[in-house]
Amino acid sequence: MPLTVKEALTSDLMGMMEKTRVTSFLNWIIGVKIDDKKTWGKYDLNTMTAEKLYKEYGLEPNTIDFIGHAVALFTNEEYLAKPAIGLVKNVRQFLDS
Image 1 (spheres, rainbow, N blue to C red):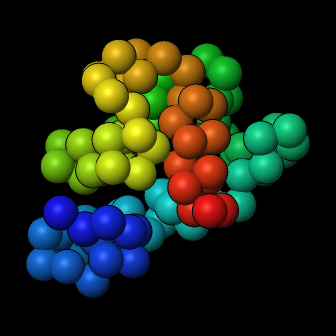
Image 2 (cartoon, rainbow, N blue to C red):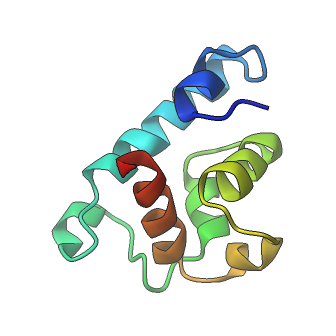
C-alpha cells in the first residue's frame, strides 16, 4: 500500500482516469480554507456527507478506502455518513504535514 499521496498517484493501483479524479479531489481540498466558506465552492461541508463528496468526484471504492483510512486516518466507515468537513480537515492535515 502506498504511504503517501504521491506514491498512490504514481503507483499502478489506480488507472489513469482514477488518478485524474483523485488529483482533482486533492487539488480542491488544497484550495479549501475551513474558515472561509467561499473556498468551499458549491459544497456545504457542514451538511454534505463525506460519502456524497466522494461521489461528486466519482471516486472508486478502493480509492475511497485509501483516502479514508490511510490518508484521513479514520478507523471505520462511520465517517462516511458524517459531515464532509471532518474528512476535509483530516486530509488537509495529512497534506500539510
